Image (cartoon, rainbow, N blue to C red; front, side, top):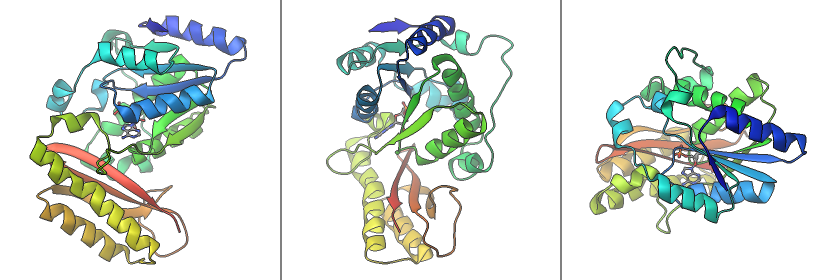
Length: 280
Ligand code: AMP
């Protein structure tokens, strides 16, 4: 395994592998790797000849500067995780090579990026789309591996990949959870023991919603109200708890399309998100 810091070095490595006809799988991350990231890396390992993992805490996507300052950095451990999982290249550009003086371009994806997280975190998806476009231009992967945990992010990046003719396949990997249901997130390590317990209301209300959906409940207003009430009773500050169309993320009147229940809530000032897909 090699660790590469410069975009030009990575681009020439990638061009070499593509000339050899090798399939390159790519897992973008912000580091502080946990078992959720490991699942993405393992899937990439299984489905590709060469695996690139990027580790870059992208300040452009943080709407709250203090959130960026507190973001956990565990680079040495992350490199070991990548080595253990058979990653070929860790791409760890520094901020200056990603955003040198004079950098001005931004990528704005459109409607799917304006809703939900986009509304609550202005600029967040512009930051995500801009860094992902840069990473894709450097890595030139055949397959891009993303986690379902960030459901809207997957929708935004799928749009970007289609609209900008990136030509890679986007693979969505199911959310990895702790045994009690909490979706793994680098932010969980900032929760106290009590906060972690309260945060369980998020996955619990989503599982309850999914169970009701399976039993035939289709009244989105009632299902959303139940989720919100469960979250508030646990002391969480709800940003949204909604049921929307899984591809457009807008609310739909009854039909047979796949839906997704999406939740964003704050626990001890830490913003947590989770979702479950509701199959027709
Ligand atoms: P991050 O480092 O938070 O930017 O996440 C990097 C990638 O890991 C994104 O595609 C996330 O959706 C994915 N990811 C984060 N948490 C999980 C999880 N619990 N299960 C599956 N994928 C995840």
